[in-house]
Length: 105
Image (cartoon, rainbow, N blue to C red; front, top):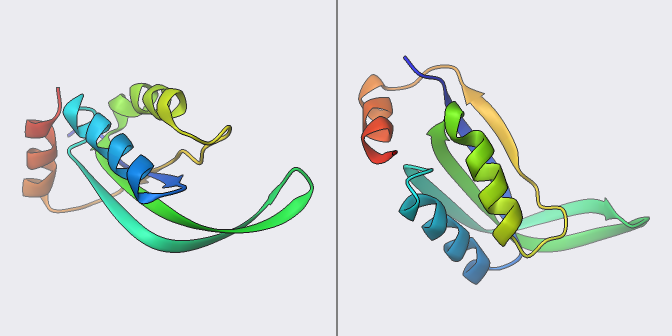
């Protein structure tokens, strides 16, 4: 069975989140991207503590797509340094993984 990942990526607004999600699914790099609106991020940026409302992308894919997803997100993301973090999925419904495989190129 191939390895699967959930990739997290925060976006500044709904428009950029929808654009990136659509791009990944259209390019068959992700089977599904959930957009979670209204998260609050607190972080340090250029020696300042920032608090920002963001949208979180939950990107479901195979691990072998990570490099292409990272490149695509970095190229099209409005942030200078976007959050792109992958977590390996240890287990899940086999039929769901089959569906992921059927969606990807």
